[in-house]
Image (cartoon, rainbow, N blue to C red; front, side, top):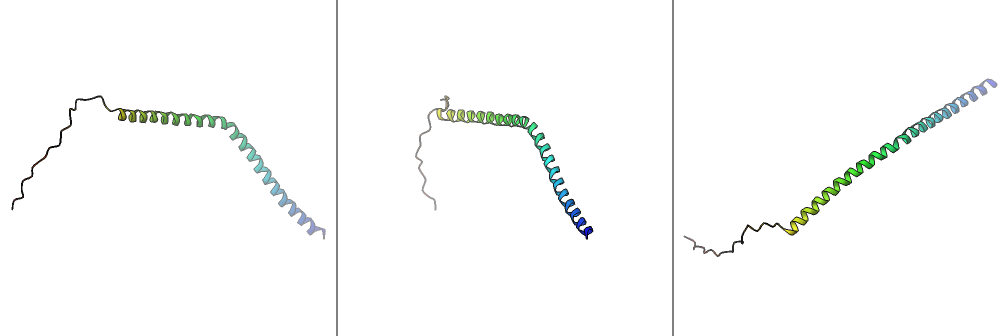
Length: 98
C-alpha cells in the first residue's frame, strides 16, 4: 500500500517542483532584463530630450516665420509705384438688334 502513496507523493512533488522552478527561472530572467533596461534608461532619456529639443526649435522657427509673415501682411508693402486705382466708368449699352 505504500507504493501507490509514494508514487502519488513523488508525482505531486514533481509538479510542485516544476512550478516553483519555472517561477524562479522567470523571476531571474525578469530581474536580468530589469537590470539591462535600467542601465539603458539614461541614454534613452538623453536621446528623447534631444528629439524634443529638435522639435521645439523647429516649432519656434516656424512660429517666428508665421509671426513675421502676419506682421508683414499687416503693415503692407512700401512700394507705392502702382499709382492710383482706376475709377469706375459707365458704359452705354446699345439697344438690342432684332
